[in-house]
Length: 488
Image 1 (tube, rainbow, N blue to C red):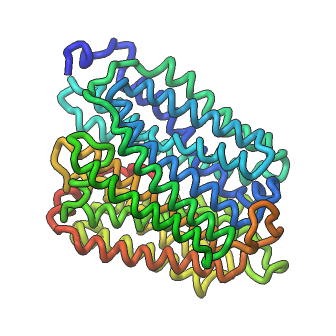
Image 2 (image 1 turned 90 degrees about the horizontal axis):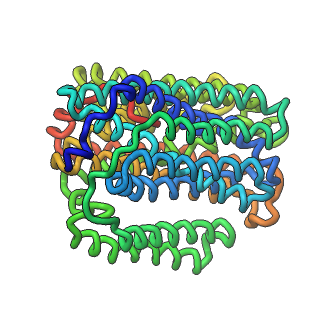
């Protein structure tokens, strides 16, 4: 690391000012995460597709997000964090504007997938603050405080985004409504350009492009297989051959990665007894925290007088439900140190996973009123907050010092892959027809929603079991560093 690259930036770029600019970026991130959920039913009507097919948007975006994290994080180390933050923001802005102009399902799917580049913003922002405070003597403390401010802005803007779309959807045209997040993200390009210093990268070596190609192929084949099941049914031989091919591609990917000193994915670390249970838990947790968002929205908007189930709620209530869920997430995260002292660090996380399982299991008998929906999501949110807050810290504690960044990033990546796979499965479960070209108008079958809630509940219970397999000392050590909620 050269002295020039670590030189302290000019005093004009004080830490407070830099964090202020980054808060604006996280505000845009929260808008993206909260804005669309209340209006998914309206988007489906705008595109003339069924509720089930909206899940494919989430699946595509989550796959792109999962691939973006390790690739762009590595690129940031090589060429500089500001450059990659600008690149990812530009891609997100392009995707956002495609949504505004999209005339069809396919075009909207492409735009939605490109939007997934925003997932790397928070990790890069934390890295910018970490490097900016290198000479402060309080690097870790200042970075944690800045991360807390950034995540606070994120959570607040999620609620703002949800309330805004819910309030405007009845009076604005869909293109005009979708232009709001596109404008916010585009404005971030100027904020980053003017407000963030451009320091050179400090990484050495290159990018593991072969590993990236292999993991992309594996995920692409698996998603293609799930899409084939959606179109042709579970009896499709082609679908299962594609899924099997995706699984088999993981074998050369694993062998290739295990031979490299700096692989895209450090499979040797992931296979250690202390690490794999945490990453498995993150993967299973992604089913509910990411994969179930769209089904929750479409179920709430379904009219029970027409199809016999649903809450018959408007977009405004879905906004309220999102706000309640985000608040319960925050409560679950910020009370984690207290519950860790009461029950022990690992048991507190097991309790969190059990609460998620209970919250989604409650949907099975109790899904007829808005009060029941709010109770269900509140319970699930409390458990989700604990898991979101502590899993990255546990992964870091289970990794050697030079690989903590990779380990924490992988909890986000595995969670995202889990969400993408769940979204695809849920799209199949909720499908009311076998064609994407001419989808049947109307709602998905109730059995599909019962399947979604059951899968989320079982996945959370398996996550609780996975946590019990990890060494207890990992959680005891990591609980000391849990101070903020590191993202949704």
